[in-house]
Amino acid sequence: MKRRPPPSHKPRPRKRFGQHFLTTSWAHKVVAAINPKPGDVFLEIGPGTGAISFLLAATGAPILGVEIDRDLVRDLAARVPPNVTLVTGDVLDTDVLAYLSGLEPQRPPSVEAVMPPTRRFRVVGNLPYNLTTPILFRLIEFHQRRRFFADATVMLQREVADRLVARPGTRDYGVLTIMVRLHARVTRLLDLPPSAFNPPPKVRSSVVGLEFGPSPVRVVDEVLFGRLVRAVFTQRRKTLTNALKAFDPTAPAVLALAGLDGRRRPETLQLEDFARLVEIFAAVRRGAVV
Image 1 (spheres, one colour):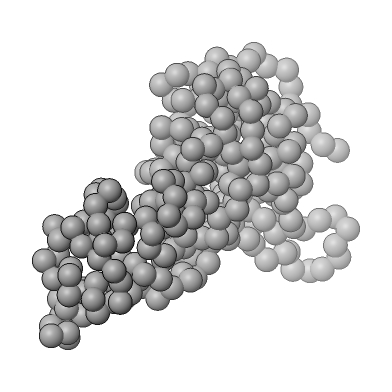
Image 2 (cartoon, rainbow, N blue to C red; image 1 turned 90 degrees about the vertical axis):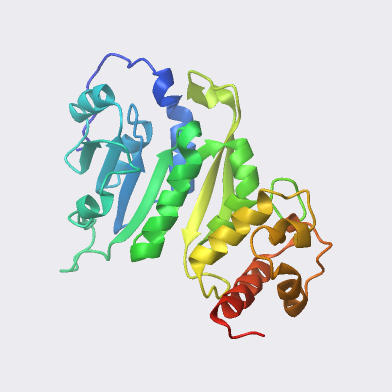
């Protein structure tokens, strides 16, 4: 028998946490986009009032909800079923992997197998707009360290979604686009109007899916890769030659070795181009290229 949440007061959204609570009708659409399966274990970032939590919990999936607002945690803790674990904290500095490692997926009642389904760790969340980029980089960090999460389905500002799916040569293409695509395949799943939230935000939102996996290109030095990408996009209006000179004085020679026209703009480079530049810069710094 499904546990129904008892009546409770409606929490008031707090501006300092950037809270906009998802409405029930849109929560159903988001969960359909998440497409939960047996064996899934979820990290939910910012469960808020539980609009998504209760729907996911009804599938039997274990859920770890990390919520920074202690009042919301207290209200939600009194209503959630046993397969939902709540932690008060900031996902940017909470050791979520330690909590998640102890959660086991439940075996559907219709399955007679002795062993439970294989665990698949997934992320869901309605990300606060002012922390979207740091949280995305935190998820990338988890992937780099442990290859822990299979995917993430997150709600974020439409403009950020545009940057994640941007193509080379467009104004939205930049650091976030490249660094995320180095570790995940990105898909726009849903667009949400302001009325999908309470209170309605002043911006439009999107649901984006990130499928984590091996990098599509070989990167010999990921720290150098990140530094190079950030360096050229801080001067994206300049040509490649001029944008890279401050990064490394050997830039003109490196561009020539990479077969790249120094008159191009940074936003025209593909992921493969950045990987090739990093490989040559790294070789030059080792003295392997004269």
